[in-house]
Length: 199
Image (tube, rainbow, N blue to C red):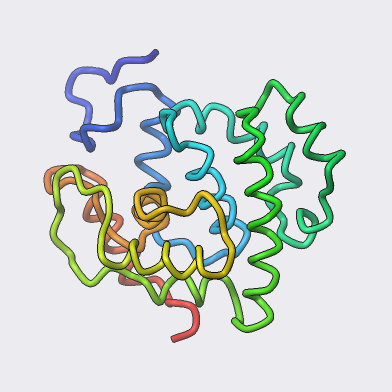
């Protein structure tokens, strides 16, 4: 594990010094995302992270992308039991049957959602957090609870309020970079420039 050099910028406390973690924190976490494939991928990976560290998932992200057809919804809806068995044998990913099956199930749910919504992004961004202040150790919010409940009503799996809140943090629906983090202002500026889908 790499250690940040002396004088390295202040980062959020969860960012433990591994170079892959610092790069993710500095360039992705908390920045707004409007691309449906990236949003679907992030929600799936947050589900895989449940019970594990995000660093574990991040190190396996490219393997996840290969295994799950780049998280392309239209491709994933055609996955079947043979694909599940193939994925359970893939040592590059987290081999958890329930989570693997949830990705396929959720792709089918996303496909149905897209029959009603212009984009997945337009749906997701309706739940943007209203608050702007950083809350230390936040693990859920009113908006995350509402999105999780609605997704579950539609049949999505592994989308509890804590998982959904982590998703919201990652894709910029809430800016949870701590107050003295050097990335917080950049994430705020990116949100100001971001054209919210569906608005």
